[in-house]
Amino acid sequence: MKLNNFRHRSADAIRATIPSTLKTAIWVVKVTVAVSFAIMVLQYLQVVPWVSELLSPLFSIFGLPGEAALAYVSGYFVNVYSAIAAAVTLDLDVRSVTILSVMVLCSHNMIVETAVQKKTGSSALRMVVVRTISGIILGIALNIILPQMGGSLGNNLAQTEVSTLKEYFQQWFWSTLLLVPKMIAIIFSLNIIQALLAEFGVIKFISNLFRPVMRVFGLPARCSLLWIIANTVGLAYGAALMIEESKNGALSKKDIDLLNSHIGISHSNLEDLLLLTSIGGVWWILLLSRWIMSIILVWELKLESAIRNKFVSL
Image (tube, rainbow, N blue to C red; front, side, top):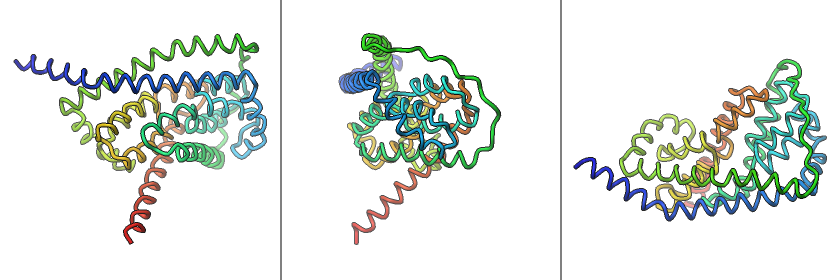
């Protein structure tokens, strides 16, 4: 009897979440495909290298060579993989890779991830400004704080040249073809898991368990599951679930803004962190520096909200 009840409740929870999850998945995929195609065209037109060349003189304030601008700009508009592809062609030491990696982790895949955060209800302009400035501040701070950390890593690998529009298109097509099913599978899996956890009261247990951690970060306990997902799997997937949570009223506009301020800086701390560690970044600096910045951003937003409310009530 109990088993049948469990099955019925599980089936009902899954059926209820599928229509809205399908809409969210289609939207995320459409945005990702459209933006990645546009960026592919910009890369072919050499816009990204041109922007990098303009920025290269400024990178001395981060203790980085001008050539590192290409890795940063590639990551900013595309993703962490693109930044790594450019970074491994440079002759950088551990210190430089760590600083560059922190900046990239703060500000990567900006167009797609900002579009997803905007869909959850947060200001797109605020998210872009916060993530960009946070990366710059951390880059400057780490350049001041970090000591010298050894010689060259010897990462300067030859990069595969892609020159024709056909080659750019083929590279984009095959990478997108692999990415889209992965995105759909992850979004559906996460939403189904969330629906089942909510149905059987597990989310409440997780919220209580992570309450002390959330308190330090300045986030409400009900954000615990989304925080875990964003910090492990990634921002787009956490935000996709956040869209559903905002629709059913589980999260308020204030909750969403606070969480977006945090996960905008600190997300995908498994795959992205490991990838950048593999090319020489110091993992605990990559993680701790962004968590500290996230805490500052969330508490600043709460203070800003409190001051605004006080003036409104006068």
